[in-house]
Length: 183
Image (cartoon, rainbow, N blue to C red; front, side, top):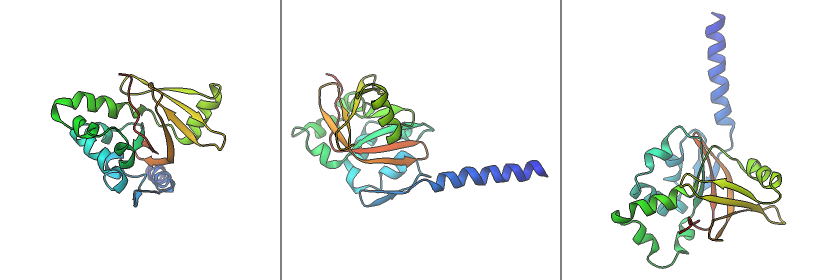
């Protein structure tokens, strides 16, 4: 009887921890820490291009998996800053591998909340190197105001505009530019 009661309390405690995480608004929608990355992203009006790209690249299942994953999620406005025709070209079926490479470049294995990223930056003398699922590297730094910037291997940079959007399989950090792997 004590084991059953203990097990029931443990389940309640685990679930309470998930619900205790902060629900963040992104793109006009609540992002629930009890949902996975895809379940939340499809509700953000600021991430419709990213969601369309994830679907075209056949990465939905991967982003719904157990994880944990950290995603630096570019907004629609970020995709619009790319040269004209870039997104349309990447969404073509014949460019699926390139699209997967760009999207996986925004994903890191493991859950790294903002405090973890800042600690990595400080522990590494002001610039952290972060390996991506695409096999490339991202770099993180912090500005004088405490803002976190993510740099790609080409020198492109994106500011984290919304941090710590917790998911049941990781965390999303919204960024204002698309990061591109080394070509």
